[in-house]
Image (cartoon, rainbow, N blue to C red; front, top):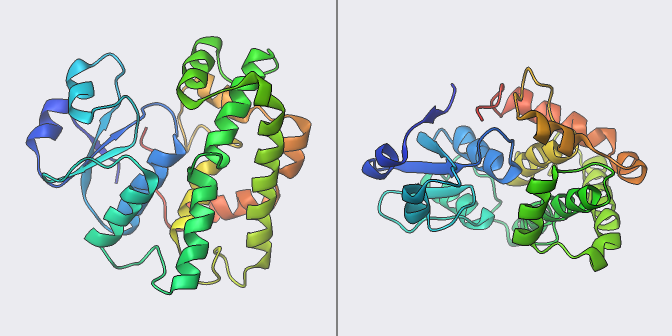
Amino acid sequence: MSIQYVSVEEAKARSGLRMVVVGKVPSPWGEAAKGFLRIKGLDFVAVQLAYDDPALAQWVGQLSGPVVFHDDEPPRSGWAEILMLAERLAPSPPLLSLEPAARGREIELANDFCGERGLGWTRRLQLVLASTQQTGGFPERVAAYLGGKYGFDAAQGATYGPRVVQLLGKFAAALRATTGPYYFGDRLSAVDVYSATFMALLAPLPDALCPMAPWARAAFSFLDDTTRAALDPILLEHRDMMYARHLETPLSL
């Protein structure tokens, strides 16, 4: 079912799960959070992030998404704390192993998608760099905002592409080594959700499944030759499997 979007006032008045999300763009962190709640059968309502809404800024405490609220608990905005909340509220089906070694591997790969210097973080900076070089990437205004917010450094620009390529190779190798359709064989994990949603930053789903803002589609679709070569088809095959089996289409943005 499509996600129910409500106003800030209605969300504040509700109990249960409420999530502030970036609108009109398939932000992978937010789409992954939606995916966890969907897979676990947890009901929630969403509020689209509005950068010019003082009531929203006061409630959320920041101008980013996703931010998840549960009852009167403190808001959660980090990828790991959102995942852990979903695991606590609905332990089944589990998206993290309880076996220490397996869990450590899952957290490592999840951080490689979501964390600082992970795929999402570095790909975003790669697109800011392309904008500054006028070869592609974000519109100038968006690039200036994201570059300032996430630490773009032109002196480090030459490192962004190789880091994206390195991570894509790591993920593709993990999928080619698995014995089943998922990163960990026949067991669905959070890593599978992250992998599927983060592919939007390199190869967005078609407009019929992901009706996103045109400027964002153009930006996310930009690939230099080296990055394009590193985008192993197995990553997109895995993405398509995840959306067919576990994640909602069309995306509710």
